[in-house]
Image (tube, rainbow, N blue to C red; front, side, top):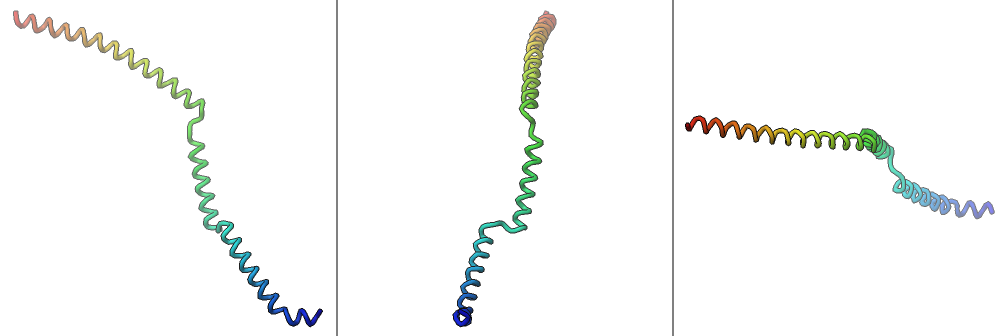
Length: 101
């Protein structure tokens, strides 16, 4: 047995080295480097901050209600302005008639 080990140890060491190098190469392709891992962590933190600043469903609902209220107020103002515009047109017409006479 001792002679077998003495004769074949270079072969076993060479094969073990090749297996170790192959395993290391496989692991280095399988997992990310520390630099890339830190970069990905930073991107993830930035994405989480962006998501945290997005309005919630309740906030969206509240904004929708406010916009609806503003739209209703705008419609009422436009209706009022049409009435004022009509009165101004009548005043201009009367003024022009008086100037002609």
